[in-house]
Image (cartoon, rainbow, N blue to C red; front, side, top):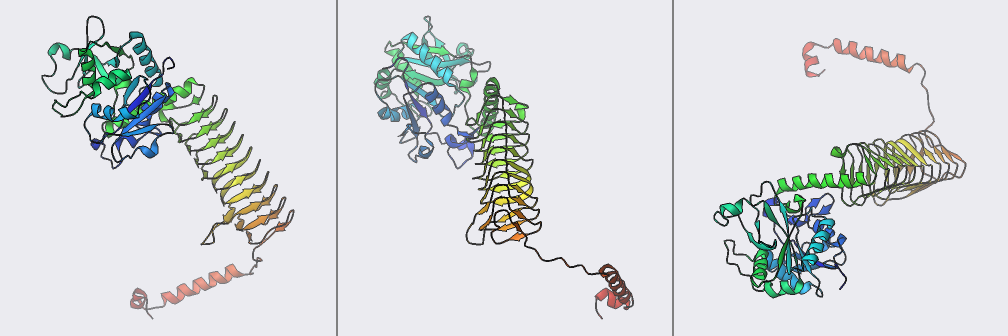
Length: 480
């Protein structure tokens, strides 16, 4: 066994009825990651060789599990002890077992590594993670013996469970435990439900080990966030606010410039390279990646997007789109899934692109919809360019060659091709291919009607005179 190796059990079978949600509490989103995957990720980052998640018989968490994470089923909701008992068969080897709660998400990998080090140093059968709270109301108090080891955990939910002296203790049980596997296996089957809730509590396993004379340590963590759980929507909002601050702090410390962290939403799954600048009121969600030197914001939403080095994206929405090095987007652009901007390309003001590739230096400056298209290098599409890509039954692609110049208000009826270096006349509806270097014009010839304005004015005056000659009753009824 490698020094420091361990395995983890994450308890996530709670129904979360107070969340008022049809989804399990464990699957509710916390900054881009399901709630229960926060402790899973912390365990994996701390070096867990195996992670087991405990779910209900419905197995609703299974589809969200990362590769290599196992699922165990708790047959009935009989408490934390029952959940750990359900996971025992899924554990491997003789590695120590870390027990985490799926609704206590803010414990970090550094804290878990420190807990493991303290457990090894104490040579304990079990170690309980604790913290101190100014207001410990509702938490189990940690009573230490003269040797500093854990003597017992006193519950305080029911009046009379704790003495007045015990209620004055500020050190509380964080609900995170580290057991030697053989010690846990020796007592987990002896838990009983002789309590007001009729459930099996993992704290009893600690008591049984202590009663057998096995050393049980308590390691105190200075970060009180380790006890911050989520039981309702209000607590979820509070935890989300803290998680946002922690995410922003991590990026700031890594060299990212956040102009206003209080208005910036960044998912925990987002990657931002140093020296990128993120403007106010920007949301970076999902698997978005922002490269070094990029300027994103203000007022940008990017979902599963990739933004290249020194690119500029302002006041726009990007979803599953790629923006190349030194490309420009916005303001007020909409890049839909499948859109790729190569280096130095531009999608300007009020431009919508869908499943479209803009080649190097290609530009769609303003007021255009380009869907299912390939645009060659350095092509320029005039204002109000439209690709008519849907015929009512299927989507068709448009190809625009390198260096092409499309006049304003050009509509391209796909499938159609505009050759390299070709032009289109303003106001054209292009239904046939335009050869390389040619000018395509497809519009009705203009006709000017001399004297039209004067005749129209005379006609309007005559109509008003005829109307005034009608009897009042007829004018009111509109009759003749």
